[in-house]
Image 1: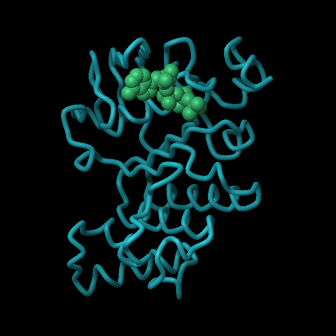
Image 2: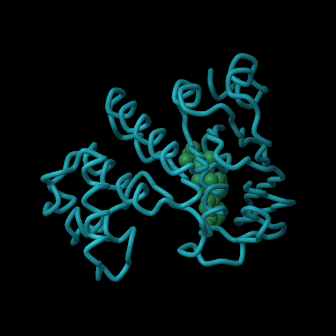
Amino acid sequence: MLGLDGVEIVLGSFRLAADLSVPQGARIAVMGPSGAGKSTLIGAVAGFVPLAAGAISWQGARIDGLAPALRPLSILFQDNNLLPHLSVFDNVALGVNPNLRLSTAQKAAVGQALVETGLSGLEARKPAQLSGGQVSRAGLARVLLRARPMILLDEPFSALGPALKRQMLDLVARIADETGATLLMITHDPEDALRLCDQTIVVAEGRAAPPAATGALLADPPPALKAYLG
Ligand SMILES: Nc1ncnc2c1ncn2[C@@H]1O[C@H](COP(=O)(O)OP(=O)(O)OP(=O)(O)O)[C@@H](O)[C@H]1O
């Protein structure tokens, strides 16, 4: 279980409070108006945003004092998931060993992650030589390989077309199933939330609400979400 206990975040004049828990293995959408604090919330869990108060724990152990790289999670952003000077193989291999000195077994595991994400044959390419969908796949191959207990997605597929985005979300669902990971996914698209996430955290008016059933929430949204969904 991921726990956010009495969490308060203060960034200049912006404040966000969160007091909630997420069961292990759950798939949770994070929705709310632009600027409400969705990325801030995910950033706090990942360790990029400091807490002004409260605690974040995973399976009962506090993680809010840990450096981002030591937290039990992988995160994908909209941009900059891949290092431009490294090949696809090496970018994915970073997931298993940051110094890129890989054993034979580790190289085989990278190869397998590339096969599973449909990137075989593209190992030697640099990110600039990939399509948007292939860049997303490479990011997901690394997430798959790292097999961390939590996967955080900060709209990594929002620049993709609808069909490709759906493919990527299906791949995310498969990876979450395969690794048993808990998923937290920021999305602006109610269909994506319904498709992938049983539960949704609404971030609005300075607060991240505890997860609630996505279907019921979208059928009868609270005022802040209603105004945002239109
Ligand atoms: N380092 C910072 N210093 C001061 N304010 C910040 C900082 N980072 C973010 N903010 C503010 O915090 C608020 C929340 O930003 P955040 O990016 O979390 O929103 P969001 O819900 O993810 O928005 P969007 O849907 O537009 O991406 C915004 O008002 C933003 O301007």
